[in-house]
Length: 396
Image 1 (cartoon, rainbow, N blue to C red):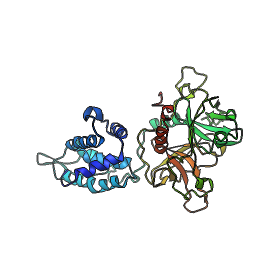
Image 2: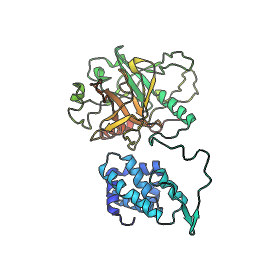
Image 3: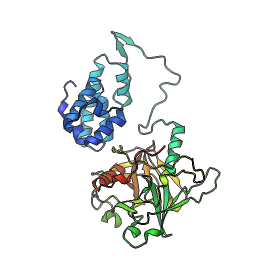
Image 4: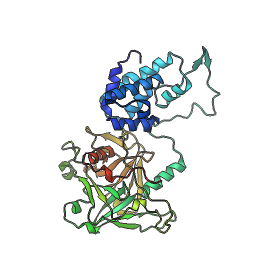
């Protein structure tokens, strides 16, 4: 790390994560088992030793780039990325670098293709493939996808989403986050949470969708747990209620969610109730590390708009912005009444937010929809000691 303040990089990473988040980040992004490769100790020392390990492998620039991708709103992290990551690439080009390292740098957008050298001899690239030079990856947040895997993951998410019916009137959307745990908006279940409507009048209609043959499936109804249904909840802001969402910055306790327990563990039951040995329904796991949410990335929403059968809406440049304390994200993906409580995904079906709100000034030129970053909800559940209600990895 020539000419670079090692301590600045180390301290920026230390401020960006806690110890558990950092371990999970390293494992998920690099398949790097921190406990095996670097000994336990004070978190700052652990980060320092991890950084040294990556430097020895020549992958420090890649580490900085991944940290920046995971923490897009951390100003100091982004500054470190701008100052140092490209400088590190410059160093690499002045040395003999191996193919693996160069490909890693290129993968993270930190280097363009260059001529490698071995023993002083230029290694020319292979012959140009037909059409090379005419095709380019134009939109960086639209990855190439494996169609079969993408369809499979979509189906698994579909099975977890339901229509929420409160007393036959107010309706919204919800989704399983554990075998018997369901997440929706506070305002969807507000009459029940505030005692104005009985809990036994709430129904969750799973599998309410249009089948491939065009026939509408009526779905399957599930009730709330008769006694221990209210796991945790968090209200919306006064400004959002009044139609002025920017009146105040939402606090970390104003996240408009309700986590409730169902009458049975439908996530462990077969998707097809008539096939006892069929695949389990599963649930949507809340990520343990904060997913990246950056402007212009896609947002996909599975929802029941206008109480209709399940629909998918997507915008490939959906995200507009994330607010100052990461309690709200705004996007342009379409929703309607009844969509409140829907899960929001990135292009690879990773859960990133809980939809909850539409622009009250919907005729304004910069109309938006709004959700709660899922990491904010998880952090509050941890603070409330309610995270045990969530499921771990689904049984797929």
